[in-house]
Length: 443
View (cartoon, rainbow, N blue to C red):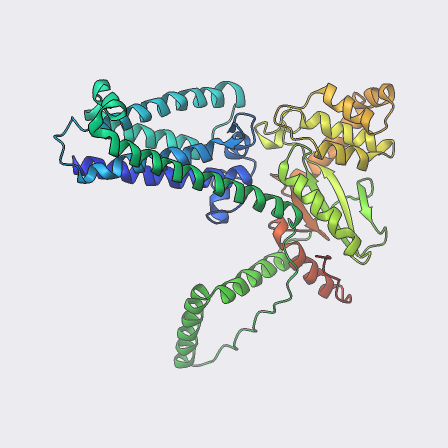
């Protein structure tokens, strides 16, 4: 019995870890490191599922509910490790079996939604289903409905029931508080999506010596330096900054046509930032806000160009699978709004929408009308061959320069690994062009 319950407790910990990863994916915040956000791939199934209308219940992400479930199960099963009750008669594991069975029934519904409605699969979600199957198997010997009811109604179980309720409330409060903190962190990330400007200069590497003994001593010194770097937060950040700087400087300079793309900033700005975006992408919305807040502080040295790359197979065969249904319609609306000189009005209104459901033509027409566009002319433009051709050319250009997800940013032709290295890349480009230092954005 003890070994079986211990295994179930371990599975609860694994499930809780997966729930944390799912929360991280839901908010786009690297709660457990950047690697967790990359497991499903940018714009992959995890992103699609986590941004769908089915990803939250009563205002809380399903991942937060999962965290509560596994924490509550831990509080229910942990005391049974020390129970002296005869195996099969302990009401705690029997009640836990009922809870896991209910969770699996919910999993079946969620899997059905992924198959039939969302049409995308989240690997982390599937992993939690496997964990729940393991829990069901581990608790199978306790599958006694009458014994489970004893946990709720018999006098002997009152103390255990009270302890479980208190433990569950504590776990629920912690899950709610963590979710609120992530909501705030997401809001903060939206306002500082470009990262923070840093001017830390990495130390120059020591010159390589000639003799074997000297090279060996140098290698030993470098090994000590790596250990110190990993152990020291400041040194680790310096290393990561140097790595990002080297990646940017070593990136191939791509040729991008900005002659027709809509742009903000000084026309003769020496630094051109090109963003390939999707109007339904929440991270593109964050980037748009970050760039809009930064431009007034750029000293008229930065010009931002917007290009369309909707993650929708209706117009973009390069993505392989639709991530944002209706994004093609919205992109064509953007092109038509640009033709009428109202792009940024349209841009801001589209990004202000939550897009929990697919965008429709009626949505596009409504947003165009709210942006001050003539409805008849706007509708005709949406269907024109010129509009479709313009969108196709931008998508093909994105594919040519290696765009596979949104947002993807280029600075003077060099691709940025992420928006968070924007200021670092900006500083490198400033030095390359021999420009005076750029002012950091106002706090």
